[in-house]
Amino acid sequence: MAQEKEQELNWLRLISGELATQTVARLEATLPWYSDMPPGRRSAVGLVAQTGISSFIQWYEDPTSTPWIASDVFSSAPRELLRSISLQETLQLIRVVVSVVEERVATRSEDLREAILHYSRDVAFAAADVYARAAEARGLWDARLEALVVDSILTGESDDELPSRIAALGWHGHGESAVLVGTSERVVDVDQLRRTARHAGADVLIGLQGTRLVLVLGRMEVAQRETNASAPEPLDFPEIAARLAEGFSDGPLVLGPTVPNLVSASRSARAALAGVAVARSWRRATRPVLADDLLPERALAGDGLARRSLIEQIYEPLQDQPRELLETLWCYLDNGRSLEATARELFVHPNTVRYRLKKVTDLIGWNATGAREALILQAALIVGSIAEHGVKRGPQRAKP
Image (cartoon, rainbow, N blue to C red; front, side, top):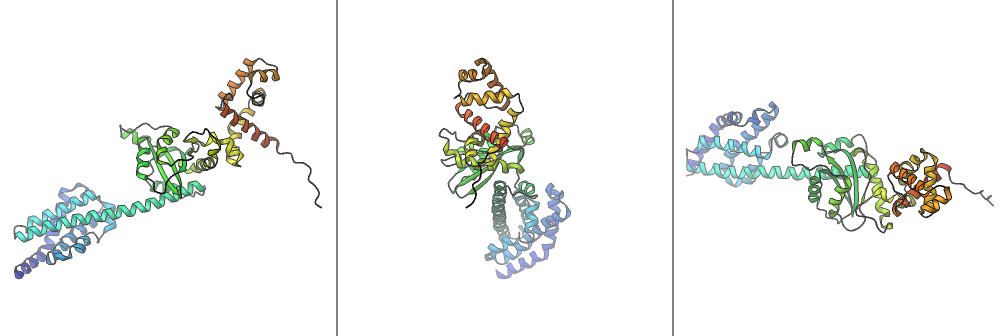
């Protein structure tokens, strides 16, 4: 029995070169993706096929070597293999190699036929293991890179490498972005958050820092929706944030303002972080709440970005209009939002006050007749006036 096996091994070693040549020819004839490869990558794939034949001969000589012989098939060029072909194509490669070997040697003996079947199974499992480990390593690398990108956005310390890092993550967002900040448990269902965002027509970068959960949102590219008719139309960022709210724990959930692109998302992140710090001070804050709806609280807490937003969005646009608009708004707010009292102070009809207030709303988007929006407008007038006229300081006392 041992003598017969030794004869078969010698015969297999003798025809190994012939089998390798036939395998490469069969690959070119049956697998279009192999023929379309550049010569370098095609050579790497062919080397894996030839290694598979040599490893089979070694395995047949000593079947107990399965754990390392099967894995050794992919050790000759693992990087080139993973970059060149997918797991599905790898299995097609194994099928071709096994077919060539089986056609040539299976008729010689039943033992060889069974050996080929066992070995092909082991190699298939080894291939799956190689790709699983590569996917796990890529997942860990992506997670670290994603955390780095989110941290750069939060700190505003972005550099020239930020766009390339974002591209490496496979970011599908296009154009405008916004940042959603809240709290969460230390274990976050990242996959569920990504699925929810994708169903809302958005892409997301996720960062977990202790109990603080940060989502950087961007709408999916138009080209993707054109190629996929079932892809949903993009929603507004507040609607996207509302769908993602279930992924956060109880507590403040703040959506930063929309910015033109992902690279400038640090401005949205700063506003959202400042909003989370003061959101509890507004008793009727929605969830999620817009960072711009917390401008008074943020300004009182010393947020310079909130003060600039109040001035740029409200005070300066009113300053550029006829003076009666700003004067009417001041009087209306100082008189407790009373039309009649404002009309008496300005010596005009109440309808004139209504008309001017409507023009203010049309100009800046905030309605002074609402209690919350009146607070925002009054805060804007105060910080704008301070910025324009400065803070008058009393005479300094002489030092003793």
